[in-house]
Amino acid sequence: EAEVAQSPRYKITEKSQAVAFWCDPISGHATLYWYRQILGQGPELLVQFQDESVVDDSQLPKDRFSAERLKGVDSTLKIQPAELGDSAMYLCASSSPDNEQFFGPGTRLTVL
Amino acid sequence: SQQGEEDPQALSIQEGENATMNCSYKTSINNLQWYRQNSGRGLVHLILIRSNEREKHSGRLRVTLDTSKKSSSLLITASRAADTASYFCATDVQGAQKLVFGQGTRLTINP
Image 1 (cartoon, helix red, strand yellow):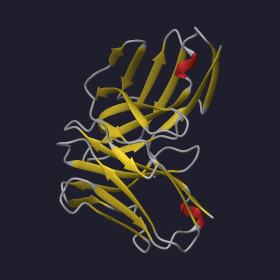
Image 2 (image 1 turned 180 degrees about the vertical axis):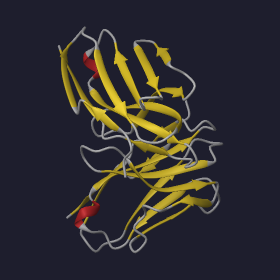
Image 3 (image 1 turned 90 degrees about the vertical axis):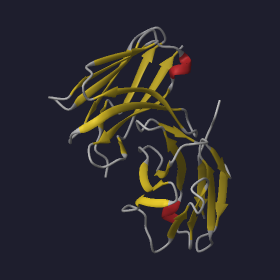
Image 4 (image 1 turned 180 degrees about the horizontal axis):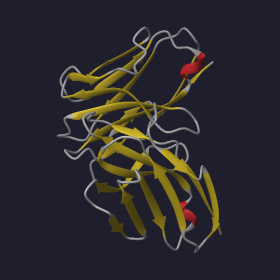
């Protein structure tokens, strides 16, 4: 069964360092999402891609966060510099045409 | 910002009992979806109900949607210990092309 792949699963970094997360969506899914989920809360959309184009990045803190999907397939989310408040689970998802979303296992980020 | 509000925030029941979770939302939707999340893992899609549907079943799951009240409920019948997880509703908001998730209900099934 096709799955969304994410790496790494866990990342521990010190504040002011740079971190990067990778996502490979289900083959053929044109839409890809990055979410941030703080413990005890629901996922919050950071950025949405349609193929290689950004559709929505209104909630992405653009002073420190960046995301790209250069060839319209896999995607990278970067944080530079990381801050203590960035500690969270970062989830990637891709969707079918009726917007049923399939999530990867997530990357748990801890900023010390 | 999160559109959906789920109720209750936490629910603890005995194995074999039914569990009901509710979700309210604020704007017009294309569909409403329910997801499950086991601790520390990604979300798993459970069921999608379109705005023109009122009820949908999938195995032990039953979802209802009342667009006039802007609310939905998820019923899990004959609960099992493996159903212990957080459950989230997500609304596919009209004109927005994205899902907006609620805060979730933490369900604990006691053996």
